[in-house]
Image (cartoon, rainbow, N blue to C red; front, side, top):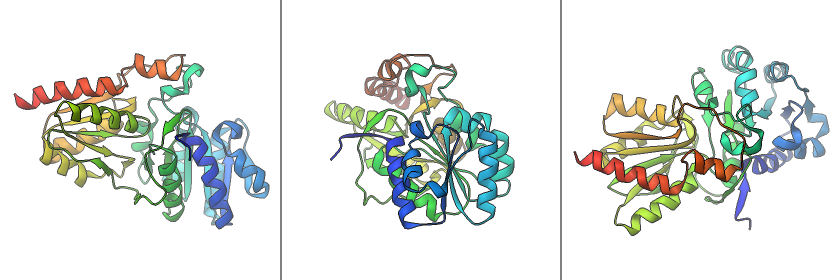
Length: 314
């Protein structure tokens, strides 16, 4: 069994599995199929695959037309293009019409690495979360990516699935109870809560083990669905622990941290700290070194929990 897998790799394999089960699935790509891994589907189902070329807006328009004709459409590109270049089409052609298209965007965040700041989308969750009717899902490993894809096929309507380039530790089993709109509690603790998504969930798990050795017991939530946010779980953990740390490979503005702060401030105000990209662009570099540079490490999570607990006690 694999110990690590990139969520984009899991996506490619899961598309093939779904395609074998459901002949109403059509897959589109914007000339990046080898990178987004939709090439796996194209090889087996060429009659149900369309390369729209380097034209993301056209790809989304084509996806809308196919969905209006009854197809379940999975459309892929890099996150910076899917959320940025095609924003108007996602908003007006898909979400406004509430069509059954799943935008599955790979190469999100700073772990895109050497491609640099122009290709490192740290704003896409905020952009997509602002669009009515659009679900936003950020899986933490290969298994949850496969589970998310199955649920997205079953759930009608538009969605944004955020995937990554780098291999991540496997956390889940294929029989995990994965529900869109319901966070997963990976650990229970009374001292504080860490809420993470995507690449940062495995880092948070590592930090939770370190903190436990110090006698600090934290709850850990994988908030894989940013929209609709599991507000009931957020409020329950706020009540139980009295302090929350959010961790994401995304800007601290408008993403997971913003969503959690909105829920907490309205329903159960407590101290919250946000870890993420501090309102700056990415840069070219090795993915692991970039995560270190931007403070997205298990050690930094531990440090922030300590600071949060001091604030909680005041």
